Amino acid sequence: MLRFILILFFSLVGFFAQAQSKLPPLQPQEFRVTLLGTGSPTPSMTRFGPGVLIQAGGKHLLIDSGRGTTQRIWQLGIKLGLIDAVFITHLHSDHVVGLPDLWLTGWLETNYAQRNGPFVVYGPKGTQQLMNGLEQAYEWDIKARIADQGLKPENIKSVVTEVNAGVVYKKDGLTVTAIEVDHGDLLKPAYGYRIDYDNRSVTISGDTRYSENLIKNAIGSNLIIHQVAAAKEALLKNPAIKVILDHHTSPEEAGTLFSKVKPQLAVFYHFVLLAGPGIPAVTEKEVFDMARKTYSGPLVIGEDLMTFQIEKDQVIQK
Image (cartoon, rainbow, N blue to C red; front, top):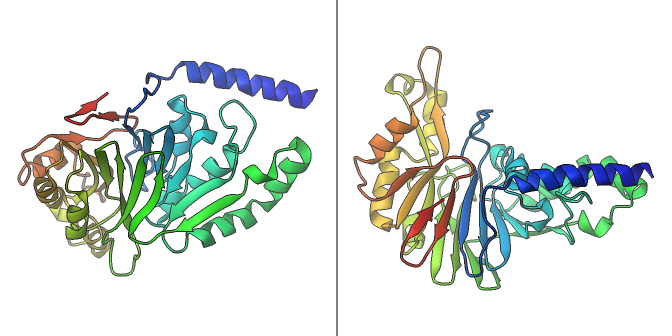
């Protein structure tokens, strides 16, 4: 009886939260891209950890699962169990710290979860070890919920594919291609992803230095979503700051990349804007202005929950 009351309560909570969804239902042939998180390791309340949701071909694909992506998915009114697959760009903690939350919470039978089938993950070498470690870390919780709540063990299993560069997913008209990028000599492999559907496409950079390989593979994309990093000149003498910036793309470099790719729309996300004692972080407006030195095309400063509809002749920001 208590179990029934709890499920009913959480289902009602979920119902009212879902009713607040601000996006209309996905239409047939629609290609929708939503920025779930645009931040970095900084524990910001406005920029959650990196995550991009792709909705097309009846599928829900997630690129990275940073801090808070689980909350953002439900904020859109999408059940956690509807995520068909997660694609990890690389194994830095800020890109995967939300993974156990989505995996475990999506397993529950409450209205906001209800995964039916295994948790599907694609990622670089090391992703299987990550999921194995999570299963060991949460072994008590998993066994307890199976015994106490009767949750289905087949829905907490994970199916991992460790990817190499090239096509890694092809279903229902959706093609996902892993693109090797350059996040630093000791941080390999790292990937961006290009998603193609119905002669439309989006490319998501992941973390990278300026990458000619990303440019080559992104050409023809309607939409490109690219990370960016910057700091005030006074901070550049700090070796720790310099190392971080050397592993990322500056606004000017990103602008050069956009000029070569020529997307219908370029969007910045995963802002790594560094500060120090008495030295404020570079602002988003300054990032925009710096990128304008090398790129004059359509450009947007991404925000959490910003959504884009990819049409064949334009990208519409919702």
